[in-house]
Length: 323
Ligand code: CP
Ligand code: NVA
Image (cartoon, rainbow, N blue to C red):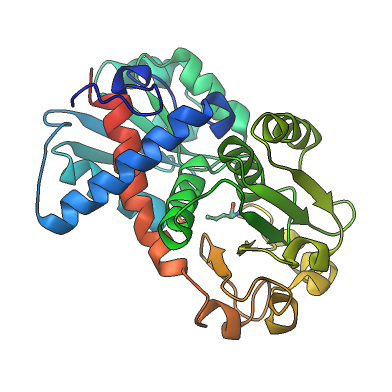
């Protein structure tokens, strides 16, 4: 693609890079990718088909279930002219104990990019350290950066801006979505307040770093135990499942602990009149959010899900397109 000058960033900034966490990118790079996603979405709607990934292959390693991430990446790479290969860890030697290092080196000899959904964030870092091609985080226990790129795109579309808005997150604080939202909001100058039960707050290092970045960008990060504090005057209301993948055994206990942190009509009455509601999905109606809210007029969750496709095409084109 052309070396487009936006925010002082060109596509060459990304060539060959990994996409593991939003903290690895400068604010201007995140804005560049969002603008690129807007352009890519418009092109698709107009029927324009560019093929910047022609002849390129994306390996997609999944260690956990997925609907949106798998389908949006598969469709996205095909729309850009490339090919996906879906690899469940149940079927490849990695699942039988072959080392991450060897798997990363072997796949680097065949493919042009690797998407991974796994448990420990350390696994993807190790994979990226040994791969010669870009590695994209399709969710780890610590981060979900491609989802948050879609969230930022959705907020931008509905609100026309990011900086200066207030995002209120209520629910599980020590969560991949919360961590990536903290990093993403801080990067784009959006105020963020996270409210979770005592003992379920976000990772200390991630929140400290987000506070620092937010300060540089003129915004704030507040970590709270009060849902009301998070939602009062919020432009954007966000929640996520109370029991992420891998926490199934704790679900009953967590359902009790998180009850006061449900996003419902009483809580949302404290948000701005024109607030929007986001949830990365899958959602559990009656638990973290009521049907009234997720199926109501403020909810943009299906735009958000669709935007996975457009945001990720921008990321793939930037990372893999120039090689
Ligand atoms: N939001 C999200 O990542 O959904 P999947 O688990 O279906 O991929
Ligand atoms: N926090 C959730 C997100 C699912 C897309 C999980 O990790 O299961």
